Image: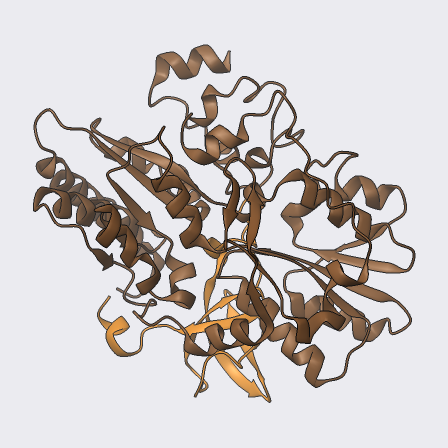
Length: 72
Length: 376
C-alpha cells in the first residue's frame, strides 16, 4: 500500500485502511482509491471479502470498524 | 463517522478547540508531547497549532524512526550495500540520510545495487528472483513496522530461502518515553500516544507513564479531529487531576494490541541489551535484534560491519529537536544549510521529521518574531 506524497512509509502515519476484494491464500487483494495490490494476512485472523483492514508495509495489522471500534 | 472528510470537518474542529480553551486553567500552561512523527505531520499539515490556545504547546517527540537511527548504523547499512553481489533494499526515506561518506543514494551512484521497497515482503520477492545474489533488507521502524519484518522472516524460513538477510534496527517506543520522562531539561504535562504502534502493542505498555510518572497519555488517531479530541482528553484529565492511559483511537486500537503480530515478533526477535538513539544516546532494552534461531538471516552476523559510533555533524541539532529541548526553527542551520533537498540532519530528511514538517508547511508564524529571525 503506497504512501501519499510527503509522508514516510516507515511511520504508522501511512498505515492505511483498505477494502478486501478477494482472498488469495495467505494474501488478500485489496483496494485503496482505485489502486489494487496484495497484502499479507497472517497477522489478522478470519478476514473476509469486504472487510476493511489497516495495513502497513504490505501487511494487514488490524480489522477496522469491528467490535468496539464500530462506534467511532 | 465513515469518511475522511468527516474527520476533517472545520466546524467540529472549531467546537473542539473551544472546549479545549474552556479547560485551560488561569495562569497555567501545558506542554504536551506528540510522540509519533505521524502526529507531527498531521499537526503541521492541518495547521492544528493555530486552533489551540497560546497556553497549550505541542512538543515533538522521538517517534520518527528515520530520525532516531544514529549515523553509525547508517554507515553500517552502506557497508553492507557496498559488499559485492549484495542487493540492498530499503524504505525510501533512508536513501537520503547522510552518513559519514554520503547517503545510500551516493553509494548507489558509486555502483552499489540499492533498491527502494514498500515492504520487506518485496525484498523477499527480490531475493527469490535473484537466487545467485544476497538480498538484504534495511529494517527500521517502531512496532508498527516490526511485524512486517517478523512475518517476512517467518515466510523466508518456512520457504527455505537462503539468500535473504535483515539488517535489524527496529526500535521500541516505551523505553524512549521513559528516557524522555527521566530527562531533566524537559517537563511535560502529558503525551499524545502513537496510534498505529498501539494497534500492535496495545495500551498496556504505557501504564507506567500514568502509574509511576503521574502523566496522562491518550493514544490518538491521525486525523485532525482525532488529534484535537486527544488534546481535549488530556486537558480534561489534567483538570480533573487524573493520570490515566486513555484510548481515543478506539476504531482501530484494542487494549491487548494484536496478539498475532506480537507473537510473530516474539518468535523472530529479541530485545537488545542497549541501542543508541540519535539525540537520546544509549537506551536500555530499546531495540530488537534477530533471535539466534534466525542467525542465518541476520545481516549483522553475516557481514563484517564497521559498527562504529559516529558523532552527528557539528552544526546539526537534531538531538535537541528529538528531545524536545529546542524547536526545529531554533536550530542554527534550519532552512539555510539544512533543507529537505540538502539535509544535514535526519529530522529534515524524513517528511515526518519535525524539521521537514515545519519546513514543508511553513509553520513559522506561531512565534513569529523568533521564527522570522531564525529563518531570515
